[in-house]
Figure 1 (cartoon, rainbow, N blue to C red):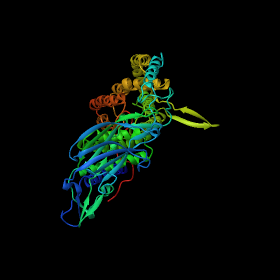
Figure 2: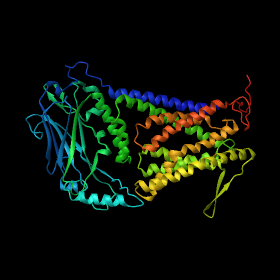
Figure 3: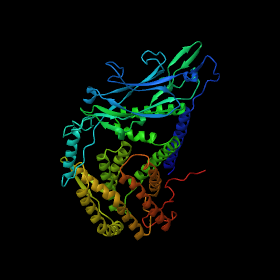
Figure 4: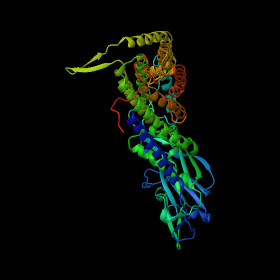
Length: 550
């Protein structure tokens, strides 16, 4: 017991150190030390302090270095860095871009009246206006096929319209390889603070955006221009094809503080690193939504919630594995509920995979499925032996107490089947007739997962029924259960932050109801830890071993 407590205390201690270290790092990102003496030689003063007349010019080019020509698409002649604006312009797409190519935007901030290519005190950045992503396959009616025919008719009419995004697209669109998509938003920021940097303590994240020139004995830095890549969401992407001659581009500009700029640079680098590790555009989009769609205060709350969620997940995993590893008897435990949890977690995992859900949700679901399979093996006392390259499964026998629990479990499932099966079958038939799916497999997975989400909590009732019949909850893994219960409330917060299917979001709130019922049974059937219960277990039993002498 001491070793277990010490290990848990060690994990909690590491967690506290991690949170404190993260807070310190975040403070170092948001706070930048200014120059002590603004008129000193070690200070770098802002070019914007002199209120120069500036102009914003945006060009498009096939290459990031503008080789091969460039085209002006927008300019702001009286550009005020403190004034927010939003403009929508139509951009002509070159032939190479329409043929699954790329296109870049060259953003210049330069002195008014001068060409950006000739102004020595200009700042510029390059942003990619296209990205590659696998298009979403169309959904059709599996019974009548009328929706598909109507879609083909509408597509044929749209193909006749020049410049339409779907025009000229083949009837069998290649959905197995990435195609070029248009980023319909371009978000720009400039630091409006007249911050004076100290040359000896210049932040490394700002250094790559800093352009400095010598003005007499003083060092002056040009405006800090930043392209917000986090605002490029998947929902704003438009598929490009060979006849998309012109597409709209929304140019948004707003000033930004230095602390927020540094924070945004770090978050943007983190998303880029995830993409280098194999995260797709859609996976990265889920993380972008956390930063873009929330304010900084709610983002800080999200961090602490996620940190505690990680801690409780680990502790619940540790205690759950320990409980089932030591479990020798299924007395008081509903084997049907264990089998159902295994089935439901596998179905949910396949559903999330079919819906191309974020890896933030998919990976934990996959790990949970493997754990539930292991629990089924323990619950039914399954032994696997290999003979001639073929597996043989052997099931253990039940004792008298386990048979009594199994009778209550079977009786509960009998009552539930009268309600559950007609509802699931009726829902699947209704979806097949009135809804559209990508394939028969997609319909099957959606029907199963809808049954799991809508009526899955009914399969948690056999355990409640067994508890009621035995008038005891001593057989439940309460330590692991409490950690999971805390996570159900944390999941309620994440249900509004991370993009996920609506049915998966509603299931988070369903678990809260079941948790409250378990708590009521915990109060109704208290456990006396000082006595041996009906299953031969004493929770306050002293550990066996030699006593220490003084």
